[in-house]
Length: 215
Image (cartoon, rainbow, N blue to C red; front, side, top):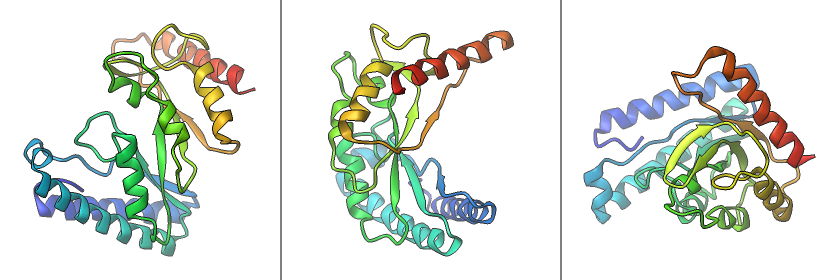
């Protein structure tokens, strides 16, 4: 919904609206998807960037109204790993919530714990701000392993890796934030070259790691 082509933006909104209708018809509580990415020229021009986000917020408000009609309880936006995408920084994500505060169905952050780390060059604990921020709707959590400079969407082999997303640290932050009933999902995307018989064990190790730290 951030293409430079207005027809493409309108088609993207229609697709999202159809997704909301489908979700409502099968009784899901939340619907989410990628909401857009600015082109490089638009991202570099402050006036064009501001206008694009103003229009995006209008489209998101219309989608919120559609979700209310369809009985969907919340819509999801994700903190992405590229600065041209909405919500890539904590400030951007908070601004999306603020701009949509009057929406009839709330837009809720789906917090990908790997993306803030992937957007840094050093392991300097970029996640703390996300857990301490004053969210209007408590975020959903998307669990994947990444390390500084690399958005990996990998699984976990243990609870306390030396670098990158650390399940033990994240679990402590969740408790400190008072997030006691937040939905969580695991987003592991195995490499195309990964052997079939290695995929399920990696997923099992990932589930075991998070089960251990969240117990």
